[in-house]
Length: 77
Image (cartoon, rainbow, N blue to C red; front, side, top):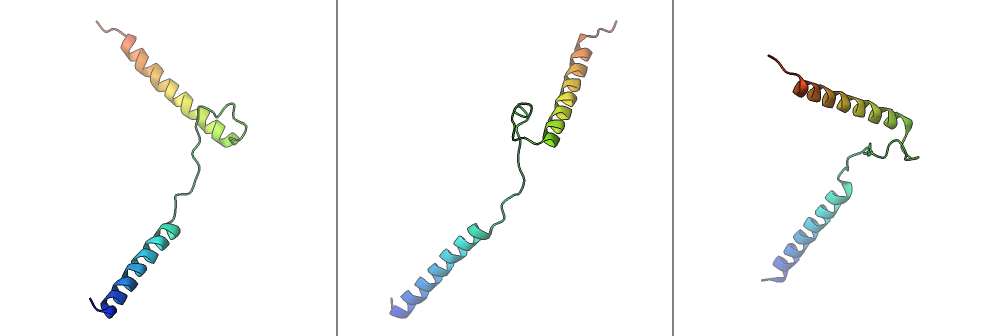
């Protein structure tokens, strides 16, 4: 291989490497926070609005479970 071909190949590979590094650095990461509702009631760093939402979700889940259990316990003749 001639020196010109080696130089062009090296420039091409360096360009690909720089492009990949820039893609990783610039790539936008998802924003937001995820809270564990199991810790919502006792953890001091969880905001009040998250605690309220967790309570609402637990209440909805409890109602679904009660409705499912009620339908299993009823008998039709």
